[in-house]
View (cartoon, rainbow, N blue to C red):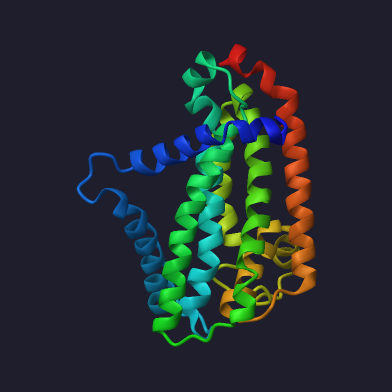
Length: 259
């Protein structure tokens, strides 16, 4: 991946790409930017309706538990689904001008993070409205949890988007994996809800389990994050970013030629 000083020089381009994505996503629609609020709110409402009334789950303040877990998951899932194909989607731009290729996944992630912040605001409003207790000291750890999640996602984006240039199936495989992974992450149920050894093992080795639990600790349980979860999330973020940057650096010089 391009060095940080070079990426810093292209910060205006990153801002422009983020702005383009946020404005262009609903260009021509009547409500425009408001869809950035409406869409996540409706996603949360549907999940709450289905799992609170149809599939009843015995978790206190379940609506809060569910939307707290969904918030980081949607950031992850949307980033992966769209970001794995970001190089191919911008192939014409890559051919025309030089810029650090890492700008593209970074801009996409920042755009999705704006949506995350909007969703987080909705979660806090719903929590207050429903009288769910929040811990002010625990809330201070939200930026830490978000930064670790962003580093984890960015590493995967660098890895997958570079591979997708050479093997276009990667983007479609990623979409399928997201459909399965949402059920293998403790978003709609408690981590210790099952006695099944295989399922417990899968949850334990799934890095997303720890990121989701980190947000659950902060926003649902109202606790300062456990060092165990912080440590694993930090390790996952650094490994992901390191591996992703290494693979990206090896492959990025062939992007324009292959595309």
